[in-house]
Length: 364
Ligand code: IPM
Ligand code: MN
Image (cartoon, rainbow, N blue to C red; front, top):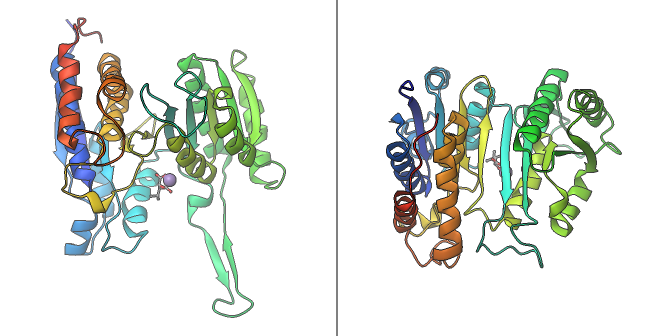
């Protein structure tokens, strides 16, 4: 007999279409729990633009502290049309990433069968890699200053802080991840050693130092501009890419586009020793709010990643297979309103497919 697996999940639907896609993700998670015999307690947390407009609060330090009682967090989307850009992003998303030390942002770039990519002559065989983005440091540290603000001599400084500890733990995660993924066992460091000679000197030194402990992993280096070029020209060259916060932000939007768009791209904010948070990487798409036409597959895939991280490998596999079934056999497009199904119908298709598959006995 295996011990009962019960997970405490904090659910943050967020703004715009966030609640609609999270509803489908939870529907799928619920189906997975029954099929794979684990339990969960979901606690809805109404943080986001709506509450901010009502109360003036985004996320207090006590509330942040309170998130530590969960096994994992599931986030819909942040960004509200009536709230100044940056307020919720900084006050909620970045506050959680930093406050819970989710120092990895894991973003798979995988083209599913049936999904259109803008890349000519590339298919699921060629587009399947993962970006490991440092998630707590770099230009996102928020440090900087103005000199002579408002004058013709104004200078704005924006600091990129890279600590040995922060860089090393990110690189170690990337090496471990590359090894465990076991695909081509190739890890590419994406940086800018030719110009940013402090930050990338540190990253490069630590990269080759840590690499010595992973002789089975092939290492490679590419400048960030060249990485963008190769992601478009030869995406099959990549297995795992590790990079800093800012470059990771940029190249994963490019990655989302080559895998079919923000309707399908999911990611995890990971603290391997603490509480992680999984999210669809697209925004809140406010203009589609309440219409039941937004694509929930990114949120559903994020729920799959969440379960994978919790160790529910079979459930995660089932969800991914169901997503591939829906992309290849059901929906016409990933775009909102063009799927041929409503948001909730896509969730139902996933659940029906999962239920119709012959179930293996739950494995721990
Ligand atoms: C992302 C987003 C965030 C980021 C914003 C909303 C702060 O673009 O998750 O990639 O820059 O990290
Ligand atoms: Mn981004």
